[in-house]
Structure formats: C-alpha cells, structure tokens
Amino acid sequence: MTMIRERQLRSRTSIKELQETAWRLSRQILEMTTEAGSGHPSSSLSAIDVMTALYFSGVMRYYSQEPQWAERDRFVLSKGHAAPALYAVLAEAGYFDPDMLSTLRDTDSPLEGHPNMRALPGVEASTGSLGQGLSIGLGHALAARLDGLSYRVYVLIGDGESDEGQIWEAAMAAAKYQVDNLTAVLDYNDFQQTGSVEDVMPSLAPVSDKWEAFGWNVREINGHDMRQCVTALQDVARVNDQPQMIIAHTRKGRGLSPFEKDSVNRKHGEALDEEELATALAELDEEKATVLAGDVEKPELTPEDVHGEV
Ligand SMILES: Cc1ncc(C[n+]2csc(CCOP(=O)(O)OP(=O)(O)O)c2C)c(N)n1
Ligand SMILES: [Mg+2]
Image (tube, rainbow, N blue to C red; front, side, top):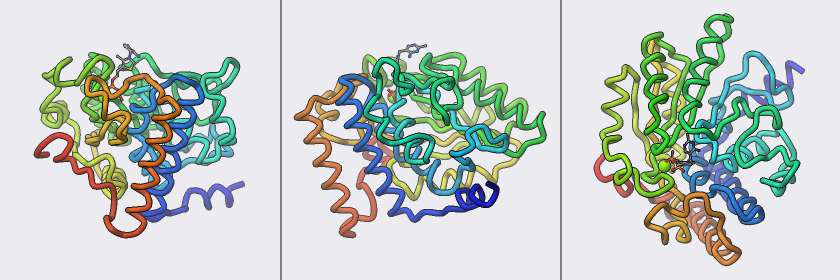
C-alpha cells in the first residue's frame, strides 16, 4: 500500500500534459451538464485550469484509493455550484469511475448538484451555501496543527462569493493564527449570478490590496495559464507564518463563445443546448490543435485582457 501511495504522490506532469488534461476535463464539464440539462458549466470552466494544476502537477498530496488518509492535503470547493469541475477532477484522480459523470444530478446519483461529502469519496466538505468554505478550510488547517500533521489545505472561492461576510471573518482569523498551511484561490471571473461583480458589488476591487491588508500573502496570476497556475501553487508552499491568497484572473466559460454571448452573467447556472455544446467542443478542439501545433504556448488570454493592467 505504502509503495503504491508513494508512486501516486511523486508523479510529475509536464505543462503540456496538464493542459491536455484540462481540455479533457473541460469537455466532460460541458457534456455532463448538457446531458443533465442543468448545472453550472461556466462557473466550472473558469476554475478547471487551476484545479487541474492543483490535483495533477504533484503539488497536492492525496491517495485516491485511501480517501481518508490522515496526511492527505484537503481541497474545499467553497463555490460548490462548480461541482462539475470537482467531479471531473476527482474521477480523473481515480476516486470513482469516470462513467459516473453522466449521472450528474440524477436522482440517487452521488454526483449531486452541489458536492456532498457523505455521498462521494474525495469531497472534503459539503458546500453550495456560499461563504462557508474558507472557514471550513481554516478549521482543517488548524486541526492539522493540533494533531501534529503536515497536510496543507486549499480552498477555492468565487468573486461573487466574496460578498459574503464570513469570507472576511475567516480571512481575519487565519491571519491572526498565522495559518501558513492554508491557501485560498480566488476565481476572479468578473461575474456572479445576476450580473458583473462590478455592478453588483463594485467595492470588491482592489481585491489584492484587501487581502494584503488582512495579513495574507498575495499573488495574482492568469488562471488560464497552466504554467502560472503550477508555479503559484508551488511557491505558496514556501510561505511561512501567513495564509496565502492566489488571485486567479479567469473568464467565466473559459472564453468559449456560447458563454461569451451572454454579457449579463455568462449563462450562470445554465447548461448549453446540443447546438451550443457542439460549438463549444469544436472551439476546445481548435484551441488544443493550435496549442499542440506549437503556434502558441498556451491559451492566448492574458490577465490584461480580462481585467486591464494587473
Ligand atoms: C449563501 C448563498 N447565497 C446565494 C446563493 C446562490 N448563488 C449560487 S452561485 C451564485 C453566484 C456566485 O458567484 P461567484 O462566486 O462569482 O461564482 P461564479 O459562478 O462566478 O464562479 C449565487 C448568488 C448561494 N448558493 N448561497
Ligand atoms: Mg464569479
């Protein structure tokens, strides 16, 4: 058992392989939500690159055949509506058979609309009520200290979710206790349920200054650049005495045109119909072919495209 576990822990993957994984998982997100006729594909797609980097670059320690291994690193999907992204990642990591992805949101399927830790191995927290995941992650991180364990905790939060006061309570407490085994990633995709973050709660910006003021170690990345995702996740592990925030500038729907057509909220909580799905999959294939042909190293979207000067 230990030898097998060590093998999984030590696996390292190239940036190109990680990109290929992210394309495959993006496909699965699109397909499973269209088949279900509901779900949150745009919210899942904005996070899939950084989640792929986290699970498959060798940054995170886990052993899918032993989901309750005490020393495993924990990942909490605080924006639980991006469950399709989590399910795609967990299936790829070997927690369950990828064939189950097509049961998303079926009655009796453990792949519920929002993650249920009692239903599916690999899910560390039941989320969906926004605002809670960072506090849950902080609890895990403090528990590691009390238990004398060396695991790290990663939490993915949304920019709309950052309107929740509980996020900032966790931010203060984590800094106070110098919880350096806690990393938050902010999926800064500019949109929430009913509109743009700028319209709904303009005071979120400048978000980097806010997290710094709260005592966190902060860095900003293009959340669709695999190399930047991996580097940031590797670097935060070297920070001492401070929790870390990675602000990932992303695009809700990952730039695929069926989502871009909706400038109000990027089709929040809406699955693509069959025709839109075909378009989105063709665009993913085209992006993959272009990148693999070496014409560009990675998707061309830059943080500046998304948010202006970063
Ligand atoms: C406490 C709470 N209030 C409202 C909702 C409904 N809701 C689900 S997703 C969402 C928007 C979240 O926006 P954001 O955090 O930016 O995530 P994105 O979909 O952009 O990734 C809202 C308001 C909820 N799930 N929980
Ligand atoms: Mg958002």
